[in-house]
Image (tube, rainbow, N blue to C red; front, side, top):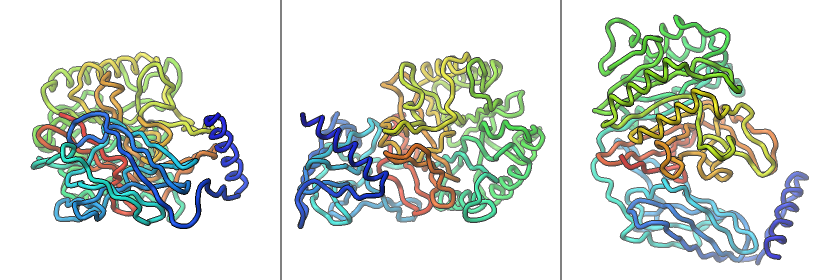
Length: 449
């Protein structure tokens, strides 16, 4: 009976929202009281795998933040910069209670000693992080950034080309945080036009760290030429005299291997914009080359950049890492096709080489859209594959609500990416809001290496 009532309330609430009528809250008025209970799924220090439940005197959304020993909201010190953390959970309370489940990779940040429960900016409760769940991260080795879906010439809500603002702003943050390299998961352009690549080159040439990328599906469209790409993108690696750290360049003049601080970065380009049954995004020869690189570096940490997300078999494409479906069925319209020969072989390689971390873009989903898919931002599908990591768009992260059928792109108003810190035995992945300059605690993850 309770489940039926909750379903009925959900339907009524959705209808009210569609009509623009506030749904109000079920519960008491006046001073709000609330209590949270955290259930950990393991005893691993630094792991937030598990769930949190909230009981409250009024319904609504309750935010939970990491706090320091004094109960103040946690910040991170990065290369001399103080960076705030966002909330790490937002629990929707209905009929006085609500629950949120965490992705198994979610991290408890270093120096987090308390958890702060708030509603509408008011602190309601403080809980202590158990001593045994705190992790001393130790000394880091280096840092790198990950961006995707740059899309020069695609968006013009605030200026002639919003990416002219959003892309260098993101690189400025990553520069200030001391990255050694930035990897991009493709889609620099709208239709592979020369002007996009020239704009890209004019930006990245201003930084003293390499910015490397692979091709995305938009870079495979009608105006693309290999010569325009090689003149402006990944500059000099296609020349006879290559930059330091370039270990191998494929005969296709696109795919290459870069070494940074002893780790291996592979940039692997798709060569087709066709998403349909029987079509391949990459060639057999490319996969031969990729398999050769994986075998050569099987004892190293490998970071692979490719554009299109993959996923586990047996679940819908729109609920794989990288994609979502909301309660009304809205999803990204250009999903990849499962079962093609290249997709099967690609995933087989990722199942064999668990030393790889696979960064991909394509769908643009904002990191907080994980509320519709717990595996949106990162998953290894219970250890079946190497970790797959979604990189949101630096130009236009997409959002959708419970009651909308069409996604919103948000150019000029949203910009997201990843900042990675490499340690001896783990990789710390922190999603970044490049508008506010904060780390997104709900998308901060630890990957064992």
